[in-house]
Image (cartoon, rainbow over all chains, first blue to last red):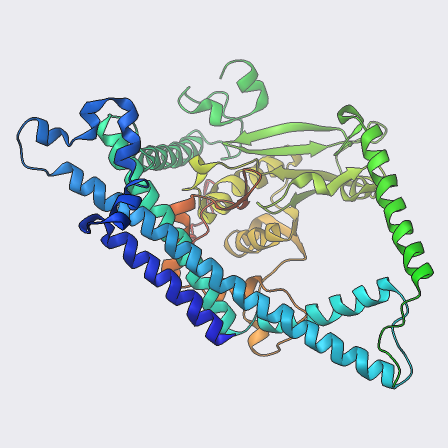
Length: 235
Length: 245
């Protein structure tokens, strides 16, 4: 199985390298890789997008190489995710194989004692018991945990590269990005906290308990922290 | 030597037919069932207060006057509080009401990515504290009984540690507290969540939250809702915020 895993990893490493260096190569392989080049897909929007904007103006290319790098990073991220997913799957597959082997050994022992399996349900129950036993042990092993970590890391890297590419394009069209929306959410969250803290202080200053209805409070943020009656009344 | 498998074909076919019959029966029942026939959380309740997406509910039985000892039930951020009141005869809420308690429960709502910055400090020191005070105000007392279930138990423990004067009795159920107990007493039949989470570094978890906002989604709903980063250093030990006078 280790040999199989190495072969699997080698194949993906080869493809990742090929993909990353494809842009600088000539010949039929580079031609084939162009079919996966998003700049070709952008051709549907008109001839201007088929060339770097800077080239039309006779300026040096700055922006598009950045796009190239982002696209390649996304592609490399996908390949890495596939590789890690394959490695993770191979580890689980090995557990299944070992469970089958253990099941057959158990069945053989049972038969030797004159207790063969007589029904399909019993066979399934025995297999599930063996598989559970193996899984419970393996899924706590450092080898499995390391594979799980690598899979998670590859997934997060892939998503990060995707977002960076999308945000690069979004910025070019003045569209809001996830990062900007997250910043806005953070600001709203911090403002709400401040409003709640100020309300508590105000309650104390008024000699009320902090939990008293906020219907008499100023309108700011009223919909977020108010008794139903206050909100129904438009507070 | 005896063969390990001596499958009785007739018995196996009968087992298969039985299983298929059960599946068919279940599907037929589901097909007859309409959405408006599904009633979860049937016990009457009123909304007492709402903060952001969380809501404090007060339960009542029509044939029983309220005013008993107040109990606030706190469920997890994962899952729904309605599990406390599934059906009329399968209801923790109803059992507490029938035993003379005045029952409150918090619905944390369904968080979206917009709630990613809401932390344990907000839940414990803002939302929960405001709800406990609200119940105290309604009942004219200084302390309530707090029943925390699952992750709600963790929040309850945090609250009780910070605001002990507000808690008369603390009850926790199925509450995970010690995530390292397996290191001294390992049993493979226990859950994996602590082992899997422990294998990630703090940086891994930070990145998970940065990328996903809420950690994990099933059918569009967060599984591990809210900011999942370890927040033990983010829960502020605030003094009891009641007015001192």
